[in-house]
Image 1 (cartoon, rainbow, N blue to C red):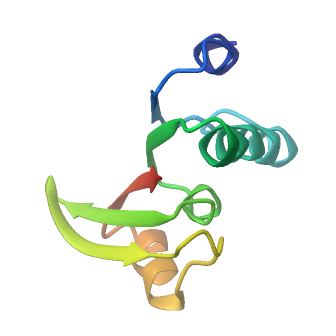
Image 2: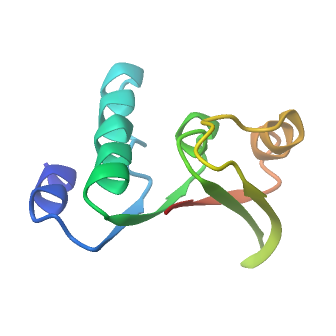
Length: 102
């Protein structure tokens, strides 16, 4: 419900902390499609924090943080793909993700 309230106002910036963390996979994908649509068509910028590689795959840019310090930056240019090395580092719990939509 919080995501719906935030998106319906068509903000310039959408800040999300684990927006799909408590959702099943189908609902999570629907939420990410909605956020991606807002970014692509309404000019909304979104900044998401997540541990989920599937969520990161929706981003234009992924910034990895270790102890609060950026360690890697990947630019995907909307390809919805994450490198194997990036997935492995995330799955091993070595880094957190900050997902940035243009």
